[in-house]
Image (cartoon, rainbow, N blue to C red; front, side, top):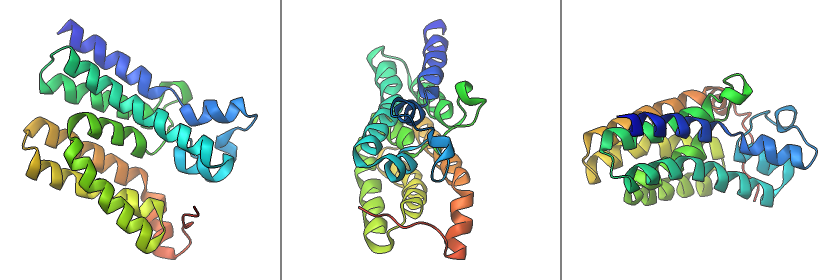
Length: 194
C-alpha cells in the first residue's frame, strides 16, 4: 500500500512538470503568452518550431509512460498501474506548479496508453493519422483518437480497470478540447501545417 501511494504521488509530480513551458523559457519564450497559450506540444510546435515541438511531445509522453512501467516493474496490480498512470496524466492537465492549469493531456495520455495497452495505441494512432490526413485538424484527430481508445481497449485488452482508466482519461481529454470543439463548429480552428 505504501509503495503504491508513494508511486502515485511521485507520478503526479512527474506529470506536473511543464515540459513545454520549460523548453520555451530556455529559449526565452513564455509559451503561455504565445499562440493558443497552451503548454502542450501542438502550441510549442506552432510557436517554436518542429524540433522543440517534437521534444515536448516526447517528454510529455514519457511523463505518462514512466509511472506505468515503474508500477509494472514493481509488480503492482492493475489498480496501482491505473492509479499511477492517471496521476501522471492528471498532473499534466492540472499541474501543481502552474496553479493547477496545464495542458490538454494528449501526449501524456499517449504515454499512459503505451504502457497499459500498446496494441490499442496502434489502432488509435491510425485513427489519428487518418483524421489529420483527411481534415488537417490536430484537435479533431486528438478528440477522435481519444474517443476511440476506450472502445478498442475494451475489445482487445479486456481488463476492467484499464478500460475504466482509458474511459476517464479520454473523457478529460475531450473536455479539455471543448474550446477547440467550438472553433471546429464555427470553422475557425487552425489546421495543421507540416
